[in-house]
Length: 158
Image (cartoon, rainbow, N blue to C red):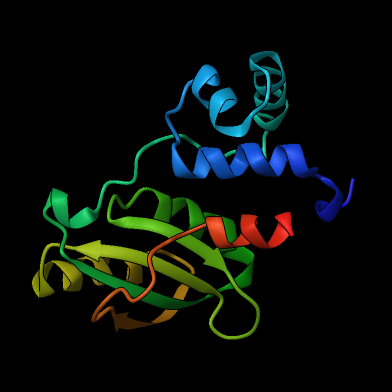
């Protein structure tokens, strides 16, 4: 199934309602979307397959946990050790996300830190990973657009 065929208008209505109220019950989603409870439950079951719905965990801002600094580390790695590097990065709690990207650099790593000294420590940990050749760090000054999915759902619903 192609990605653009994956969701019909009913799925999109349900996904939009979930984006607005991630913890809504099937009954609440049925009321909000005008669908029957059975339809909502059946659709949710299908959408819960891997690769469709991510976790329902609430987004906790890292600053609330004492990590006010956000940075992106661009990383050049030895290609043969890419899996090892990714596994080692997954062991660093301050690493929130790692993306393999095309071109140079190879990895785009989203990290958080308590302060400048902590970021220096984290950068040192990452540089010590076998297979990491070099890094470049960009400090986030301010988040201008938060993570969102509703605009994509709106576009697909047209």
